Structures are given as structure tokens and as C-alpha cells.
Image (cartoon, rainbow, N blue to C red; front, side, top):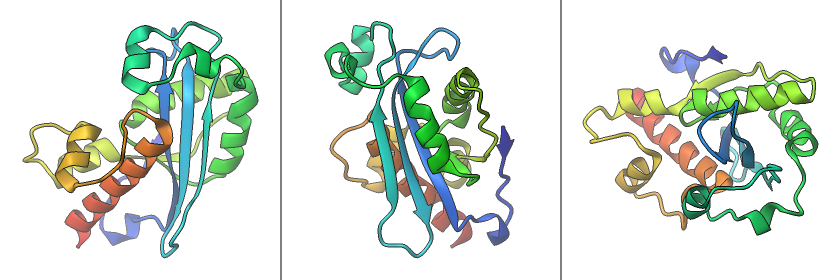
Length: 181
């Protein structure tokens, strides 16, 4: 994973893709992706292209994950599997940097699943979590839900991929404003 080090205004990106995943657990080796969301940000644009897909993980979704995400086994049973869905997202990503909240987690799942289809995801990565820690060190924690509340980001839910992409983009913008004016 190639990380973008933010050093001055030159490091700010005019175009990137915000990505978020929901999964059946914490391990890319043992668990599966159940939802992918992506928002293509371009500076100066009023609206952004986006994609989202609920994915059949071909394994049982634990009840604790359903409670967190709202994604049920019934919801995924007729959905595409990762090998069918991921190529569309890789095309959407192009070679643009990926902005991800807690990037090592999502990139672990993305890279492992890309291997299943003979692809590689080598895009530069902007990890918004350490960016938020640097920009707002006084916050009690840097969970996405905490940041959402701190910035007054009004979205109806959390732990759904596309909504979390939109929240991550808002957090990224707040961090950039704080760090670079």
C-alpha cells in the first residue's frame, strides 16, 4: 500500500475515490466483504459519481454484524458475489488515490479479494484516520461516529458503506481545512 504523505498544499488531491467496506468480521483471511461503497471526489464539482453494492459473502453473516450494519442474510442471498462485483469497483477506482478511514483494514480485504480475480489494487492510499488524529488531537477518540458528531455531519445511519464514504469525505475536508486553512 503506497501512502500519500500530506506535506503542504502540494499534497492535496484534486481527484480521489473515497472507499468503505462492510464485512462479516475483522480478518481478511477468515471473513468476507458484504458491502462496498465508493464516491469519486473531484475538486470544484457540486456532485460526485458514486457506486455501492451489497455482496453475497457466501457465508453466514453473524448476528452481531447484522446489528451493526443492518445487513441481513436475506438481503444478500440474491446479490452478486465478490468475484462478480469487485471488477466494477476496480474500474471505477481507475488509478486514482483511494481515501479510506482506517485504510489498513479495508485495503487488507480489497487486496485479498482482488487476488481472487487475478487483479491488483495498487492505488495510492490516503488514510483519513491518522489525518484526523493529527488535525484534531484533542478529541476523546477518532471513531468515525465521534468525528461525525463533532463536525455535525448529518447522516441517517452509520456502518453502511456509501453513507460512511460520505462521512469520510466530510471528515477529510474538515481535516484539510484545519491543517491547510
